[in-house]
Length: 231
Image (cartoon, rainbow, N blue to C red; front, side, top):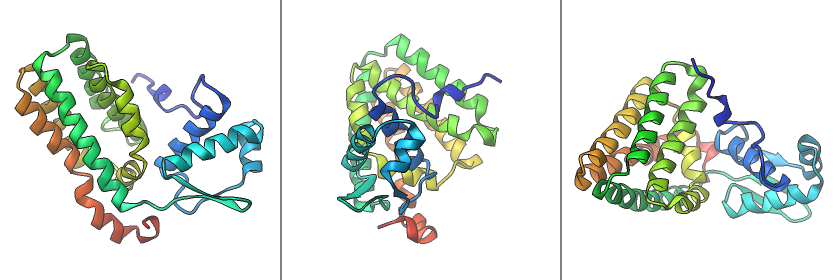
């Protein structure tokens, strides 16, 4: 099987030291490797990432802007609990925008975008049965949606939505992919692309709305199962 590990690097290549620290910590918070309540000490982080405390401070500021950490001046920094109102806000925003994205794609389907999205779907199919590749499966899901944004020249909006979706994405990680959920995701991606290729905006938007609805439907269930993770 092709090695897809490059999709989830421990330290993303390129960019400033602050960006590398931010991206790695953000990834670990979203993946719940650093669960709510985890404390950060800047000196320890500086040693871990082999940087000065200035990039650490900048990374903490960016994480706080996304609501993923709370900085207590002259005291400590901790990973925030999952905020339910922010989950619903991010879901509303994402649904509204992605429905418009697929509607525009269906009006004039770009061949290169569809080919790339189909390729990503095949890659997801290739790793779906390997529990060790679930992080890769989830990264491919993110890239699939980013590809749709890029197809209408709005990749920057995808980045903005990503920055507002930290709490929503942590909720998704609390509900790890099961066989049923994986099948639902793959079917949803296929139906979205089918609607776009058929130049059927209604079919594409219905498929996208359904595809994005599953995670928030389990919010209350996840709050009961993981009460310490939620505010």
